[in-house]
Image 1 (cartoon, one colour):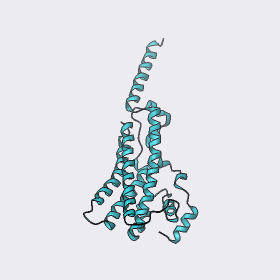
Image 2 (cartoon, rainbow, N blue to C red):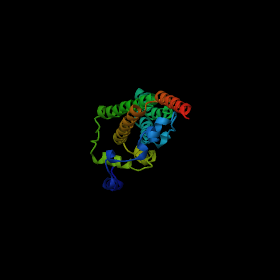
Image 3 (cartoon, helix red, strand yellow):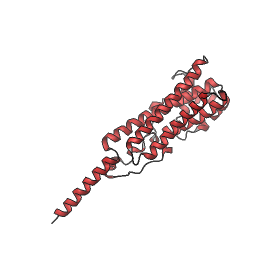
Image 4 (tube, helix red, strand yellow):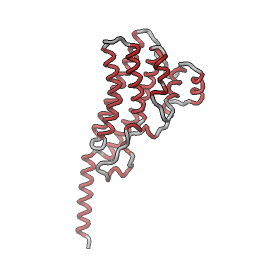
Amino acid sequence: MRSQGNRKYEKNGSDEKGQKDASHDSHSSQEGNDNKSVLLPPRGDYQTLLSYRKSEIVYQITYRFCRRFLRRGDRTIDQMVQAARSGKQNIVEGSKVATTSKEMEIKLTNVARASLEELLEDYRDFLKVRDLNIWDKNSREARFVRTLGHHSQISYESYREFVDTRPAEVVANIAICLVHQANYLLDQQLKRLEKDFLNDGGLRERMTRARLQERDRQRRKRNEP
């Protein structure tokens, strides 16, 4: 992981929690207060979610990690690849179902979060049973991985060279760093989804409000002179 570029990124990098990215937020509040008067508010594209982009990178790394470093037939391969895929796919499904079911969006986002936590433990176990090092979050290497993720157009290509050429210890630790980033983003996303649900409700609540508003409008119209 150490390279000349490492020093460059560390100089200009900042901590993941300090990063602000508009694509980080859930699609749930794009219409602001107008949500209350819209039965089926338009949704954003899940690909704009930073949590999705991070989880997609995690999936790409995990698939290649298992092919390079685990023996064919090892049950851990299926478990890790499926956990990584579940993290990615449930973000997609949650975003798509959000139009009609806020509850299901929250549920699927929680499933994505749980799947990535399971994957995180698999990577830790891989390192522990082989007496390999798990990077401290403030280590030089971990900070370097975080700074790579600060680019707005982040993709797997930013990590391909390391995944293809570095030993298992390094690749596993890169994956761990990225899973932590994805989990942090999903935690923030869930907080926003839960807040929006408490404020605006789901489809049933919007339908009830719409019916009441329509009845009130018709009543006022009948009473007009």
